[in-house]
Image (cartoon, rainbow, N blue to C red; front, top):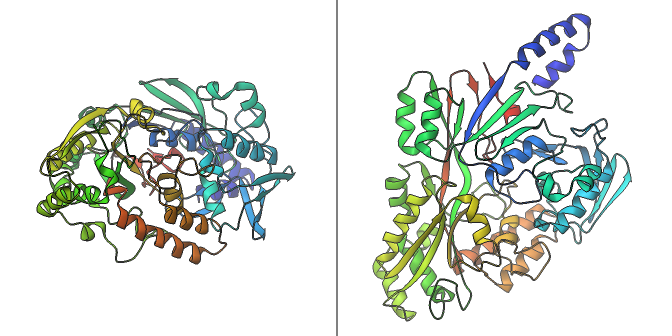
Length: 517
């Protein structure tokens, strides 16, 4: 509504005067946000993790915009239609410019699709066969087969300036990003601060907050102290142990909302695994079930998470396409140490085995403490879990497919598109079988039935049929246990008085929707 009201003010001279006064006031608005970590990248085709994603969506725009509640609507494309079962036509906004003044055109969309296919993120365009610029404001996209959720997928594809990107090169794009988003890069001193400046020619209206400073503060106690001492106005991931303290302080507010982020444990299913001597026990489903039954998620929530987590029932939330009503991982595999020991013995591993868990210490809420608790739990079934805990800046490269270092990985996954298909295609589809699929299948899992169901889901124009097929895939995965879902985090923010923040479901802190006094 703020942009609509600005438009109305332009209607007359009095309105222009009022708008000018508002603009002067808005120019003084700034906010400093404490993040858990510095972004790894500013070039959206260089990688994906939360801090980087937050920056991407300040600097760039997609064709289809995902709202705070995960609904989808027009972005750089003002409308779209299906021409036939495999052809979509997108009408682009006119008058949109990149931060350097270059016009945004259909050629940039076609170029971005091509670049994504050549990058480490081919998954972004896995269901695009061809893209054609019909004219400057019209793009036609063809899918290999009927594909019901193409528009939703395009919310993840951030559009590049063809001329600038070609001249700058991929490596420099990380340091000199150029998009159409509401903010442009002002300054980035790595591990100290990243400053964004408002792009006043933004197509949806000039941002009200003119300067946004992000400070990476990895230590939770230091992050809380920075808020209480006035160094920052907002912090992400308030430590669960500090919630009551901040609530008791005058002049501050704690804001929470359920997260989409599912903390998961990926198990290596290769015959030989990097940190296990001899044959890999986790190729045996009984061992995977034993590990699942040894992990007490309720205890983790109570002791480590201070009650601020929700045990995962499946791989995606109940709101998503592919979720099976009434199916619960915790009920299928309740904590039962004696049953777990029996399964280990049946599989020939009564004496257990040793392996390493790779985990972060600054990416997920209390991630290092969770890892330590897991080691204690698995010791009860004679699994000696060695811990390899590292900052996220090292973690993503260390566990990257083809997963040459890892046997057991704790990470997280969220699906803001509201559809299990993107997760299943990325995490569970057989690697190196189909372009754009299996690119983060870190456990090397392969199940032809799951692959076939994902293929069928990606080839139907019916959302209802897609849901049915992905539910079948969910049932297979829950039975086979290639990955253990642990819990959904609670997103916990703290702000000083005068800051207006309504948390997004996808956890993106977007200054464009914030306000400060």
